[in-house]
Amino acid sequence: MDICMIGSGNVATHLALALSEARHKIKMVYSQQLAHAQTLAKRISAQATDSLQELPKADLYIFSVKDQCLATLIHQLSQVAHTQDGIWIHTAGSVSIEIFKGDCPHYGVIYPMQSFSKQRNVHFHEVPLFVEGNSKDITEVLTTLAHQLSSSVTLLDSERRATLHLSAVWANNFANHCFTLAYKLLEDKGISPECLRPLIQETVDKLNIMHPRQGQTGPAVRWDENVMSQQMNALKNYPSMQQIYRLMSQSIHEEATKPQQTADQ
Image (tube, rainbow, N blue to C red; front, side):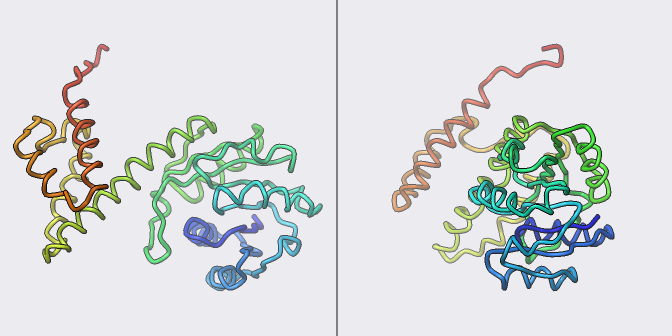
């Protein structure tokens, strides 16, 4: 397929590289900042532009930009007549497919559920891709394309994709922020955060053999008020962390004391 990338950030970069490796042709990369478009375009032998009017005719137009920019860019591209024959897709987890309605006839979504950073390589064939199209034919085209990029492809509508994205925020963004706070506590006392890594790795590894609820440990599970009181006091100079500690402990204990459902339930 001939493809135009609209965006040059983390997701756009990894997706463009995966598409190139799958022998698709990225004709042009657009970014509001031309230098950013040029950086990605150079890696995939494409042209770069900071004007949507310069995007050429293509089979696929991929919007991989900040959610708040999507509607404006989609409407702007709808004024470029020769783009209407192509399929337009976005890569956002929490934005409905309906954002394209009225601006183009053929559209859909390919949402890669992964945490992407430009400075870290990702095995894209292991990244779960979630696909939605506005018609059966478009869904088939996007599903075929997704299978060329990943071994994990699932059809998912916008409502359930939004729930999936929300769960990813909890599992990745919030969990990573907890790691950041844990590092800060140690760094402020001159202790190397490296000592936490085996613990973090074991926490993740346990997910391969048990439900996270079964793997939960710590003072909040057993509601050890002596330990929790000491730790709350230790956080007196970190009021935000103190509040998070209190709410997180309550949530852990509430979850731990819920009756477990059986397979028959």
